[in-house]
Length: 241
Length: 251
Image (cartoon, rainbow over all chains, first blue to last red; front, side, top):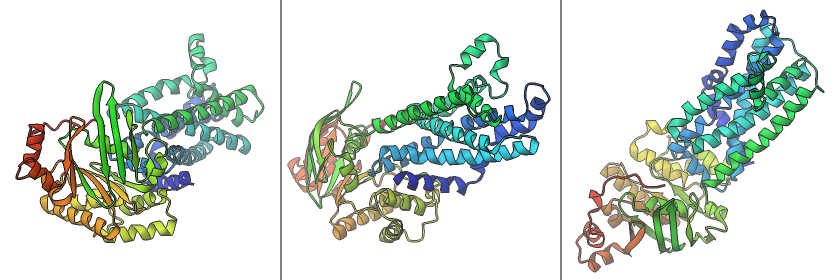
């Protein structure tokens, strides 16, 4: 209940300043418009291969940097103000994380619509299942992002996370499938969770729901979500009596 | 209302608070006085469940601090040093959220916010952002965040720091009125000795993480044969409160 009160409050705040919602989606949208046509003619794959990658890029850019919001809440005493209420510590985290998931879903739908205009064709069921994976990814990334924001020195949060996001994104194979990679890069990318999510969403967009990549991507997303929320709550709690 | 024995907090090797004992009765306004870095904020953050004590025992508003922090949170209000709202948030919305988290229903929360803003002479600022308010108004909004659920006990961390003398005196009136109207117990920190003198029934002086003396302002002055609390502080600690370098308090 408190989770939903918080989520609604944060959503109100986010929509109050609509630019914020659009802003997180600008980078993937630019890739779609300025890189997509090139990719489509490269012979590597079509829009069905690129758009899933851009969705994961969106997740990393939007939910992955969500912790930035709590940096200010911590500085201005807002976080202490919430912590001194009887609200559960899980709610304090999930209230924010659910807001980030909703914002990401809206951004993802905008990106998909843009992709559709350019030539993306994917089955509705595959897209819906893909969005579910994206939601789980958003929950994981946002939780980790808040945990990092509470642990890293405030002024270092933005430079560190935006630096970490780049290799994770490149290693996920979001822009070009990792099947093209040399062996060492292929192996390295298997150690990052996002590769499995990208491949699962590609599988779903291709309509092959029962394939190994979809299964692996779902398992990785679920494990990552549970582990990330656990880490997030632990860090929210450890700052308290 | 507050009973504390041997409360300590270590940050690594640094002992910020070293075995504090204190008792506060219902309806008292108690001033917790000391230079920056003396352990005021650390003690306050422990008593408000925001920081885990290293050792000691404490009952706050009838609940054990260690066994029932949620019970403590339900019964107290806490207003931190500096701010409670981000500068660009909308005051009314933030206060309603705070009331909801304290367990009030939606309409109840709205009514309570209006009532409290009126009580603190803040009617009509619902749609404003803190950055657009005067220093005194902003600080009263901060105070409001701690009073929405009508707590029996409220902790105010340096409620008047940074305010001009007039706003400070105005804040004292508001604090006195809270006690008169609602029988609220107020535990506040300050490094203004005249604030402790003018507002508090009783004063605890903390230095280097220990309570060095306590009593009513009058008692302290006669005990140390001093004219003002400044002289008391000098007599007890051998230093002047104001000349203390403004080191950042460990918290």
